[in-house]
Image (tube, rainbow, N blue to C red):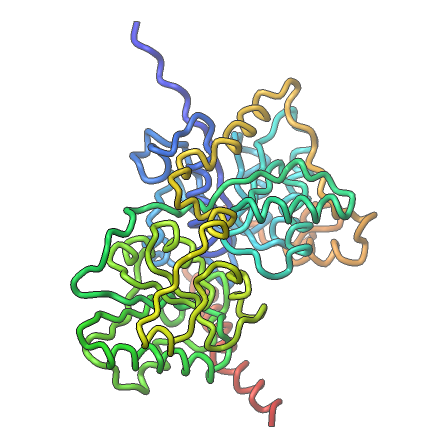
Length: 448
């Protein structure tokens, strides 16, 4: 008799932005029980897990273009409110649930899920983590994620820091599981191409001020003028009007309109991995793209022009060997990465990426086979440990202090009608106008 086809594990991913959808969906493929790195993330649907995607409705809900750019396919994908999602989790059965949300969203879902699963004999393994480099709000973000079965750490350094925070407050640290960034990959760099291509990986919120963003843009354009034989690309995360994980008040697309860049300077969008396929030098302030580039051994520069500061996130790269300024780059400097630093950052440029998710898959398999099912979710924050903090976090997602939906919480059972869609688009447009136009003006007035 022919061998039976193994059951595809069922995984749900809840994400609140384009970047977190990318992280969550790719992570789902990497950690799926029985999955291998060879078949993980972009193979045919029948090879990987059965993946259902849920996009949490909010200011950064991804647009169809952003989802297409991420390039990760799901068996189903729909937009939901927090209450709608919790209702689905009460009715459906999954093997794994990946919470790809900001910390407060994770905490709210943990309490809401604990409520809807309290009478169930089985539940999914709940997984969460961080999209990339963790350089701010370490304790706050970690404690908001505590309570998941697995809290993924993208590097050995992060795993050590995560455990130290949990143990330091007396919380269970066994959930911390070391993996790597799920979107690494691509061919290793083999040498300069023709034309030599310099890519600046822009970030929506770093730096923040018009002065600093204009400075970086001017230096990039100047570099293009100095090297007409090179192709100089400004890699952008989103088009005007779209939102990402972070708010972008001053899009580079608008700033560049005031300049007259040379013909070898271009704005590009699309998947970062595809852009890196033609990159000879990756330049950024602190983007996770630097880690993708280092994984492929592409020459990588983290800029020091605006200082090495926590507010910029480039302090994370102290010791990397990648810090340099535009003046140094224009003079021909090419930094060499420190191999010890790289090995601790989840970059896995040594070829060990094939096994980076083994521990997570093994742990999930053991939890799914646990006799009697999984225990209730037990977040560190409760009405007892954080009575002045937790209720506000839950209320933002229309949940009461015990995790139950508040009266009047949005929980439609059908797709929004035409009127509701128009109202929602108008509301988002007003929000973006406020963020991109009104808020900066108010701040400038306050500085007068």
